Length: 229
Image (tube, rainbow, N blue to C red; front, side, top):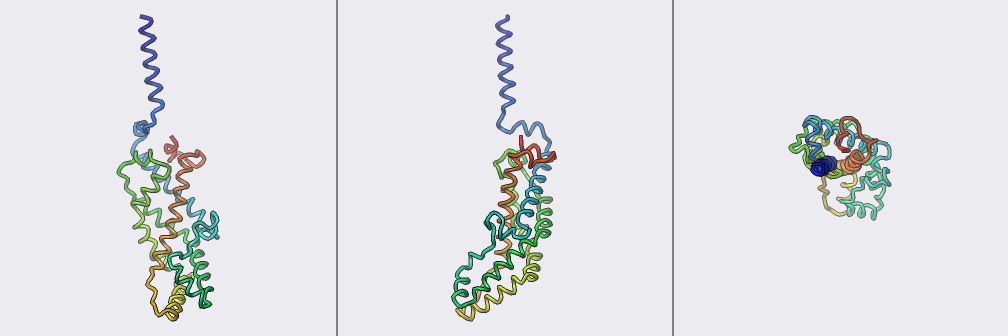
């Protein structure tokens, strides 16, 4: 009888130990409601958006943060830059890059407004998949579902700021001189290019912050604390 009791205790202990070391993520589903999980996901996105804006939409943000890795440089039209530089119009290239990055760095309110709306309207069909996903599963899902909406939401306000910061004026000047030199018109969606570059930088910074939220408790609060389980 005593041996049987010891055996039962050992089996029970193994079962309890196994349940406490469940790496499947099933315990998250059991411990938290869908409302809590949804709040955690949206809180993570809001926090990572704030971090991205604080890094990039500030003075020397896009142009200088992290050694200028997010600098908007118009690499897609390098042939235009080379042609103008060869005819002593290189100063226009420099002006366009400077004005564009200053414009992007001044778009904090535009970005926060567009992202807030997108996060608020985000529908997640499998909450557990994102909660238990990889280091940037939530951001990747957001990018997949909301990139188009964000581009559309930012197009008009970014366009207005491109006029204010003389980005459009400088580009048109460049296009005119390029046509004079080559007799070729420039058909390039500058606004679309700029918005895509801005979004790419913001999304990458959001991924970095999501990783920290998941791995560093100092980056979490009560709403998204379950992401650290």
